Figure 1: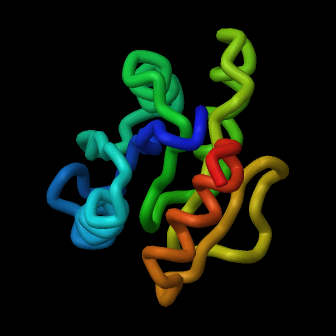
Figure 2 (figure 1 turned 135 degrees about the vertical axis):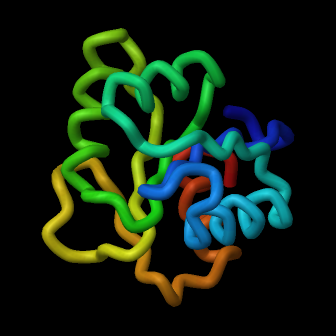
Length: 123
């Protein structure tokens, strides 16, 4: 990602596109200039990883879902040759699998976007 490109983020929540935390996160990211794909219910790591690949996303995040799910998503992305995706969870900051970033529910949207941009290399 270069410094003028929009950040592309896939966001999922345990209750699908109507999940209030996922919707709030997606709106905050969009309002901060990111391009956001709000998926349906997080059914499987495979489906979420496929969406990330299809959308050519820079980051994938879940709101209120188990962080271990993202570890499996990262494994599947790695197996597909995709190594440059940042995984994050909203609502958990401790006990996260390696490679998964955590943001508390009270994290400011601008802070989340800044961290994702930094991770994607677009300072």
